[in-house]
Length: 154
Length: 154
Length: 154
Length: 154
Image (cartoon, rainbow over all chains, first blue to last red; front, side, top):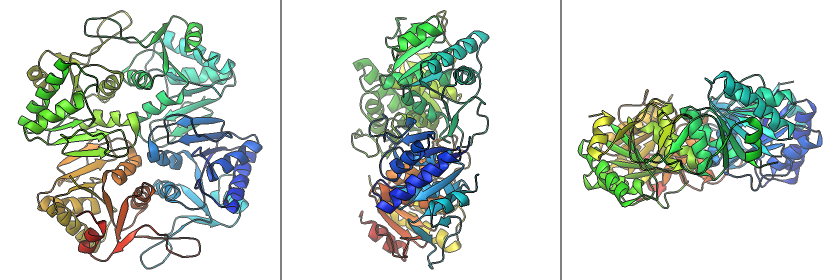
């Protein structure tokens, strides 16, 4: 089964939430499972979108219990390993779609690239070298459909 | 959704494998998800049993890729955190059923008890104090049905 | 530099604390570094003993900050990974000395044996198979000196 | 004891290695312990610099053994948790100094900022929002001395 990790901040803009919902829906419609951090914001919106299309949704939680998990998860995996769980989210997807920016989100993007995963970003932060030249390795998309296409899994 | 973790060694006896298959089937028939370590032996037999009853089966892998995962998993989560992932398996179940004995299995049992989880054991190793008195906190079952009953989730 | 992990419960008997202090002192006197969980009870007593002999003492903390670390550590490493850090304590020692029993302590013993580490136990819990026969692989000592000798590092 | 984490890539430029050596030396001269990832490149250069000033140097290794650790570490902690150990490096420093850029390095920077740590960067990658405006939260330094000053620990 294809697995897609979707990452993004708890504190997200309405546009980011809308994009996350649509990405989640598209992932589920294509028969893939959605992996996310399991809490609010982009994580919840992506889960909601996937659940609306009857998709399988797994939340990899930082906390040791399922408290605080969003209600759209098929299953929540409480890890108790804190932000180190971001490394698991980065590994668990065949590709990683990043929506919006935060330090936690950036860590997931970086850990995914560290492992050579395909990473597609909608909005969010940009990475350049010290001279302002873009660092290669992340694809950018303008729409959820384009993000799914660039994930190149289907 | 109720989640049951099933733990046990890769190198298992035919009886342990048979018990694991039956435990997996019973978990799935009751509508619960099965969590396991995702590889061979007891992990695979439990997954096979759950899959035979169309259950949801999640393998929490120690390795950073899905290589070596058994074929009965609905989803595999490659963690890349080695044996530290045993702590996640211990946390992810509402109860933990242990079948057979090994050092890795004992670590899962101990980590589950450390967090106050209900642990039911079929066969496997026993723990006593220095005077030979059993250490309290693990329930023992003779059959898969008894193990499910003592897990007290349904 | 030789590294010795010392594991044991927070809630320890006076005898266990005394043994831990002596083990810590002996480890430091032999020029080895002591690794422990960094909090109270056996962890603190072992750290105190090593510090009394000017040894290097590292606490591998489960929490994400240094709060609650005992005052005898040269350095505290806050991991934020909860009980999964027990796997690190088990790996970080060239040998592991276990004093007293608890579920967390048992998980460290089991994880160390899982990796083939030499484990020496003073007091604490015993592991048998279902028929009551001792499970091989842990050495037992009656005194701190014997524990150090059986660790076979010096 | 004050603890400073120094992060940077294995594949580093001569300038980055020189800066790392100098940062390590300055950290040790101020009586602080140096935490790093324990392998080559920036990690090794920082460790070498600290060791040259008789400082305490801890390598938090991703692998489960001490193989591959650089020779300047006082102690190596093999974690076996892969890149998830980047979260520990980020937590273990009272401040984090980043030298040079790589995906792994960026993950450490991001995890440190996620926890509100002071992060000072020498060279390396830059983070902007989608409009090219710098994301606040990382201090930049031109020299090792300036990096130490901006870490604001001494």
